[in-house]
Length: 276
Image (cartoon, rainbow, N blue to C red; front, side):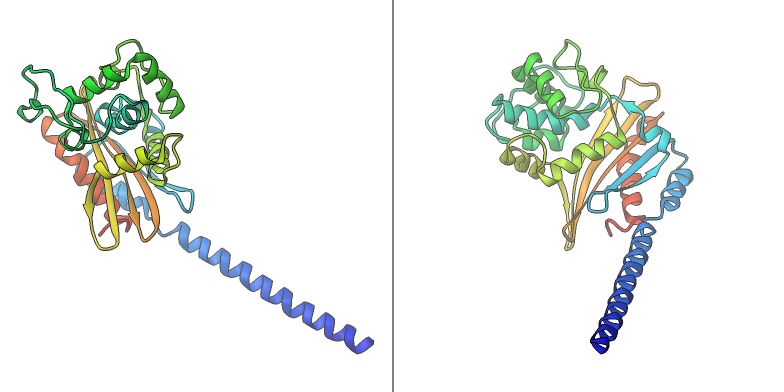
């Protein structure tokens, strides 16, 4: 009996050693994972470009943020054309449009871009950021349903005012970069409180890049009512079964700065190892 007790004690000691080893390995793994993203590298990108802005990466699987300029990342701005993503979701969910390929009229008037002067579906309209087509979609949704869905999605400050086809271009709707990443992470996972087929359709039309081990989904925005204007680039990356949502916004004092939205965003994703 005494021998058995001794063996039991020894076995217990071995088990405890194994448990401690596993805990230590987990701690080491967590520390390595926490350090896999170098925020300072993103800071350097913005500093070298001389750009005042923010970049937020949300690693969904680790529930971890990497943030350049935290104060700005928490500040809300008009979403501009990044709202075309929720606008598409709401239009399809409410039945205002049947599919992403159903044709919507642009209205027949001269537009800021010649490419906008064409009737088209959401698949093409979101690719060229066709404002009049999406304004028509918003009018079909209507102010009451739009307000209900924006609240349901908990999108930014959820305020749309009383003009259904301008609130994402001139306000009062505003959203922060951090809020953008949380919203987009839910869309990427199909976890928004909307039909799953609708979410799948919208994911499809915002896909921009496909490589061997990662896929990029993204949308730009240009909030011109600010001085200087605010540029957006938001989306997510699917890589090896993981989701990384992101949001960039930046001051654009010159019209030539519009190209910096994607270039700075992609450079930030590259230094963080999310894309090649």
